[in-house]
Image: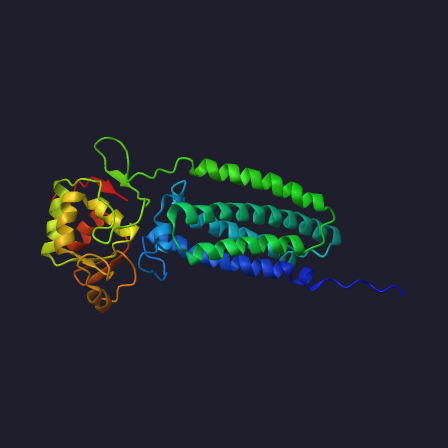
Length: 327
């Protein structure tokens, strides 16, 4: 009597495991997408002198083709869920059709996992060498991508091992070249030139450590609208809770410009980090501040960097609105 060889447990459960991990990745990237689109602050514990998740979300690498990078990650994870569960859900009963669907989805899972792992590897390099931040969401997503690749490789019996290496080389090279091409034009200057007479876009990538006395130097200049708005915010008692090492907070400074920022700094801003200049951490604690910057205007809280047009709107400002910059 010939004894049938038992199927390894990993082969039985590989697709559900892949779907579960990809589902977790979709939750993370979906959350980050919402935070990026709404201008909110990701729930991430920040430590003095250490940049975190929100610094990553505000970096030039967090946007691709005008859309949040997390959105593309979300779509990638959802695709992996579909590829993993398709043969389990769409069971036609025909052995050949099911086998063909399994083969095609395994190839798609392999290609997707390789592409995601290569892309995540590049992002980890950027996180460590360029942004220099600690982002649990980003690290978690990278681990998910690698886990998907491992499960895809060991989750079935590949008849042709060479197929794995060939796919890895082709997909890996295409992904890496495409990634370098996408980010080749990342502009790391504070101001992106636009049409003369129109507002200029602000971006900021920290270069060097922040100075506890002032953070980083403000390189933009104020116009009449910025100065008038700063005076108005001071008059209505608005407060901006900030941290000297926070790149988001520096972007807010850049939106105001040097002259207006002097007004904001002396009459509106509250430094929350004890090491910062004229720090008042007790006020930040009393206001239950969880992220930087946070504005409180007329009793309402606004998280994240706010364009001056939005600050003008919520504060009841009626002066000139020819603001020079936007984010």
